[in-house]
Amino acid sequence: VQLQASGGGLVQAGGSLRLSCLASGRIFSVGGVRWYRQAPGKQRELVAEITREGSTNYADSVKGRFTISRDNAKNTVYLQMNSLKPEDTAVYYCNADLLTAGWKSYWGQGTQVTVSS
Image (cartoon, rainbow, N blue to C red):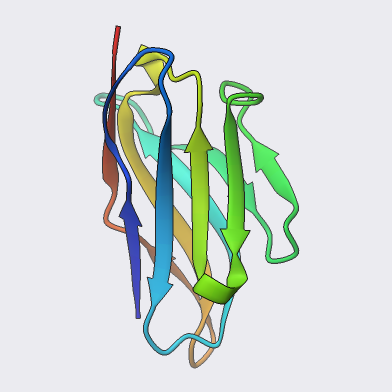
């Protein structure tokens, strides 16, 4: 069972990126999924979350700019990031509740997002 985050990169301020979080392996169901980020010297913070039913929640700093969505058929959750700012620069991690032998929380490896001014 593995959780893979991808889609990071270098973008200019005002640009967009789409992150993907793919759950693979012997998985029976994907529950709630969360995107966190951690900038150098700062604590990890919750950016956005989505329930299995599709309810969403966002940090105030990204509301109106980021959109979290999911494709249950593909076991994938996306984070569409628009109007990026230099302060969005961080390593982004996905965290998901996966049903294997039981429900368990998994972390992806992180993907770097760098926004230049």
